[in-house]
Image (tube, rainbow, N blue to C red; front, side, top):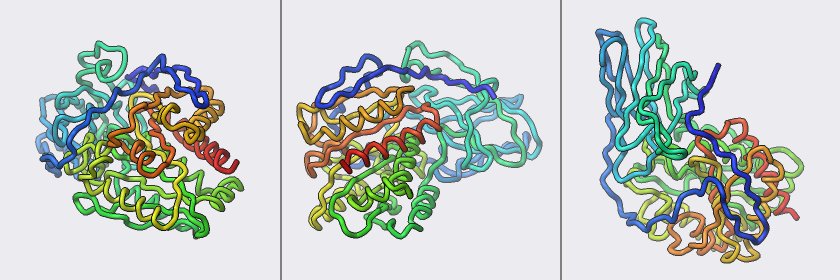
Length: 421
């Protein structure tokens, strides 16, 4: 089937040099993050249920984990308009959507996607079981009011129309693959059948969902690696790379076994379970971007990880590497600049360089940060408060899924080699 990639993938070559800031010539990444209050703000929790159009024998639903559909109208002639709104504003332009549609009689329908103060960022994925997704066939995808920019949200169309064949079995239509808290917990549990892996709660989210942590330990060492993911709900590609990364570190290879003989691994794969399960664009259910709350810790999700790190350091642990997996417009690394982190950051820049050598087919942009205070974002907090060389590891929205898996695997292998030198 023909697939349409509606946002051009920029492939720009970057060389990550040891102890040297890399100058980007392509995707520049985001600018300096503004300091904002992380005191909770009101959130409009969406209504969840079923929209029925009895004259058409057609039904829409957002009533499942990560569902997001705020309204739908029947326009006649099997044409419908879907409205997608955010949990609150201002908010990052990450218009997450996820709903399913079915009909008592098989038919082809057209759905116009509309958004609150945004454009059509995510190319639709289709599934009949909620777990296995493929991009919508490009012949069934129509752009309305094409974007005027060359990259980012301005390059995205204002609206799109999707043609969908529907029948009695629901068809899922989503911005990215679905990985709600239940599915993520099943993944954690499947790994925890190994005798060196356990999982437990380190706190609760604002809506009392479990903050689950996976511990990989032979019970004898006090050096550790920390990995977190999904502070922002729509950032599924980062999660998929992280998933492969963790599966490699916990695998049965001789290298992984040697790594576990020398290091413990702690993983929080779902930092924002409320935002994920509620289908939020960006925030937790306190209405806050969690990756701005690593200074004041006003939100329970960030406090859970902070308290866990303090506890482990009091037990004698030394954290030697930290990674926070995200998604954005294109693959990019955000390390701390070598002029600040010095020799301690060698492992981060060597790691980037080694991954680049292994994966020359798609070099990743690099944007070192010279700002580490206020800590505010996870990477800065990990380094400033716990002396941990850390990085924000971002994957593109449209990075091919097989490459995400490969990149996660290669990243894990290269990290193990560096730590075991």
